[in-house]
Length: 222
Ligand SMILES: Nc1nc2c(ncn2[C@@H]2O[C@H](COP(=O)(O)OP(=O)(O)O)[C@@H](O)[C@H]2O)c(=O)[nH]1
Ligand SMILES: [Mg+2]
Image (cartoon, rainbow, N blue to C red; front, side, top):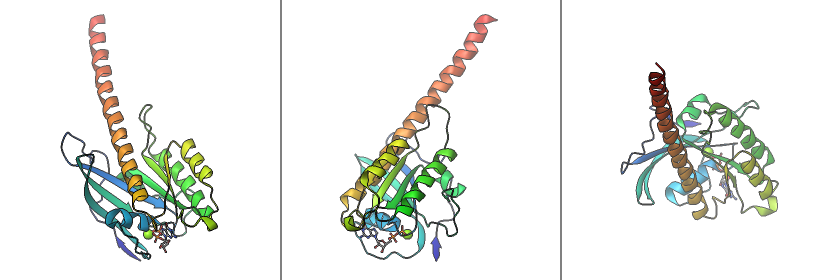
């Protein structure tokens, strides 16, 4: 196994800049069981190609692109599912801190991988629990390998239901067959990341206003 994770992995807090025309950075973490197509989806997005075999390599890729006229720097962590994982999702704290948004992948032909996604959603939610009004964590659930309909064991409805109940986005894709579907997944998680940042900013300003009125209110009573 070759691990190519960069050493200067930073926490996401304050790292993603969204100030006016500046380049926007988004840290996106791909999670899910082994063999579901995390690397295939990543490579499809980065190169538009499906190359078939990817090996057991964990990498963080940087990719710049223009989305809706805005320069975006995608930092994409294509993770490895740890061996001997217990039942709690198995996402490291380092990964949870680093990520601005998550793409959770299962294979529509592999029920066990669907259960892994279920656990990982819970683990993310628990870790990223935020003060009320800010609890929208950018997560997209992806049922991959939709070209293998004859081997399907997880229905689209089950996938959609899980996503709805966990307040996540949902897509079924085939990294093997289409680039466009994969592009939509990455653009959607980017949208959610931007939305979450806007909400955070809003709450930040509201917080300042609340603090100021508390101070002025106190003075009036003195
Ligand atoms: N039929 C089909 N095979 C896929 C698809 N995505 C990935 N694979 C195959 O599934 C295997 C595992 O893919 P990989 O990206 O290495 O999975 P990872 O372990 O989650 O990173 C490889 O043989 C891929 O060629 C897909 O959409 N359809
Ligand atoms: Mg892989």
